[in-house]
Amino acid sequence: MTTTPLARPPRRTAHSLSGLDEGAALPARYTLEGSENATLHLRGEDGAARRCTDLMSAYASVNFGHRNPELEPVLAGGSDLAALFYPPQAELLADWLCRRLGLGADGRVLFQVGGSFAVSSALALARRARPGRVLAIRGAFHGLGVDAQAVTTVHRAHALQDTGFADRIADQVTHLEPGTVPEDWDDVSCVLYETVQGANGYVPLDVAWLAELQRAARRAGALTVADEIQGGYYRHGHLSPAVAAGLDPDILLFGKSLTNGLFPLSAVVYRSGLESAATSEVHLAHTFQTATLGFAAGWEVARYLDRSPVESWCRRVGAALEGAARRWSEAGLATAVRLTGPTLSFEPVGPSAAEVVQGAFRRDVLVFAGGDDGRRIRIAPPLTIPETQLATALDAVTAALAEDRPTRPLGDHHGS
Image (cartoon, rainbow, N blue to C red):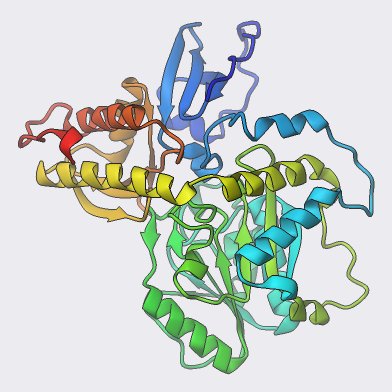
């Protein structure tokens, strides 16, 4: 994949952008001037250019590579905005999702802009169908809206939007410890979960427990909601980790790589019966009027997945990460390792996660921290990353992990 970096704008002389963002994880501010696949073209405040390998996939928003030339041209069609009407790609994308998820003609898709809106809409659908409390799993991150914060336990304290309003509705939410199955379901509306908890450090929940939780919910008439906004679209090897695990959630949520980062579109997917609980007076459920580019991008991603060997890419990237994890564990550099398809997380031994993030960035590789206490490193490369570039980037992470401390021999990574 190749694209021409954007023309360089005049150098900034004033710091007008807010500093209340995640860029503070790095020692200095950089501007993104261009990209292709897993490579970022950055420029520092001193005017110096840098090339960096993105092992974050922009928080799972570009699973199929930055500025993918097979996807980006769709934006050239422009955006035509008209209230009350979807563009044709919206129905095509909705049909594709329902077919791929095994819902067929019984499936319905409510599109939203951004993941927090999708979570809000899912909770609203569930509570209209069955009023009551929401059971959320401890260790989850579901967004920055008030209701999404109320069902979130990871990183909420770091959110600017944590105004305290979510505490006013705390009695509407119960946070379950993983492995727990409630006995009393009388006032429960739904169970909300991430099959793999992303912000918590790529922690996969036990599938047998989720299945038991789903059976208990069904017996009680409560619903289940799988939030796969970050974890879906092959971030962990499947379009839907929940469906691939044999679970049957009543509502599924997608976003991020739904459009491969071209537009913040999200999708709430459910069975048609849930609409009967929403009266005919409901007509403010959509924010699609501002998402016309998102539908075009989402449909192009769907077509791209149909013609691409995405499962093979997942296996290739997963094998490389598994080899790296084994070497780091054997050398005493990493512990508490979790591999979920083409995604890896672990706790570094010695340096803090923040130090590893900065050490990797000094070596032109972008990784990110996670977990409730910020002690885990998360690695999630674009599935389209070239094999040699991934190997070189993982070598840089090795150097960051081993910085200023002796280790046992790492061996030849090319033989893994």
